[in-house]
Length: 571
Image 1 (cartoon, rainbow, N blue to C red):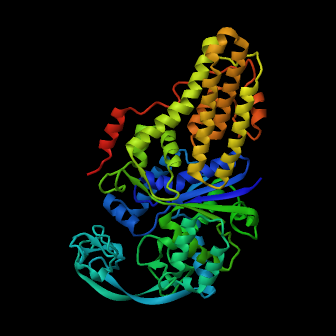
Image 2: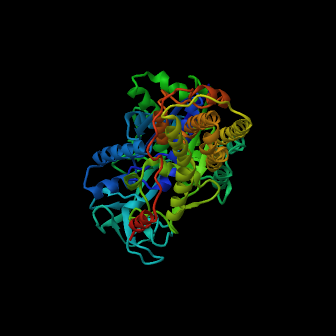
Image 3: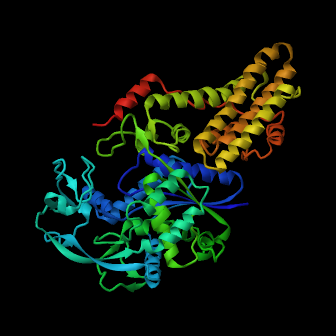
């Protein structure tokens, strides 16, 4: 039994996420977690809300709530949506947890002790009206490039030009609107990533099996231009992990917090500590997953994320771990994804454009979304959600192939033999050929799931479903029954057992449908079919009662498609 540690990139706390965020990390991570559990491996699957930084403060201010209260409410909302999409986290934590705060402070102390942190004086904008330094995102003004009057101090949303706060025309505080701003000197901590460049380079070179997308982004940050730069890891904010050296004050850093991108990846470890506490377990329970001196040397650690998160997970977080000189587990494999775009453009929260997780579950069950998103995962390039493609994928794959197979065989059995697996007859050459085909395809399917080739795995699973439909069509038990009821009984028994095999194989992709099939066939559990022939012969024996299910997957009508396309088109 292997031990698999799985983390997906932490969704930011400032609102409900869209389908692109879901397929970019959480959903494929869940697929991999479910598959490994089904195969009997020990899995710890962790995720959490990323709660610190400027956007959290701004979102809370917009909602008119204290930031801590806002984050608590949004964590509850995101947790509920994760459950709605059947994301099977062992724990869904919070980067604002006590565990993450202490771990972050401990990592900073270790890095300082080992000479990997510099104190740097720099000039920043100070708002006299707000009595605070303003991070770049807290400064608004007119873009000198395009004239947009709500450009932020880091970037203009209108023309996408990168900016410094001092570039803005008529700058003002995004908090109070005050223009009483001045430039003052302040000190911040920098992580000396450049000092670890050779270590990082050699480590990335050792990962020959990583996706090209992952390694190419990491190498670009390491070597392009001036190469890997040192990174500021503190900010002048109220909300975040207070800057300390472990449990001790950090002189000169009073009132500052750690930068969100420093503490957020550490929450992967913090989340494990939260999980252990929630389970009433001691520190050894989480340390055996994270510390190589406490049992983590045999753990395979896999991360899932969108391509925009790759630099932080291939460079900054590993630099934090390496620089601590402590025996923490480094990631073994990073599965990164391109972007999912929406219907000829991009998802947009501000414009209400695209499908967000809450709205998706309002209109259709989670399996519909899980199947389409995973079968169209943006692995080799960006992919695009269109309502026509979504309708076609659901109708052709789920309704016409899997749903149709289950419906035909259960309804025919009920009409001729009752709601019970029929006795009589024996399997012959046709059944043998199907078994050979499915055995070979399942091996391919498993290899693709092991390799996290999400789209290819979905195609192989669909081909396994198709094999059952083709068998049923060729065998035609409805015709055979007229002259040889016993032969028809054997064919039906074979097809019913295939449906159970399909439930087991499909459960990582469409868990609700798999559960519905388990209930349909009155089974305590449907295990992963390690031995196809044994499962086919021993699961549904003659006389086993079942119930004909309602429609497994309803088709999406043209009217529904048109209505949803208009509803989610945005402003």
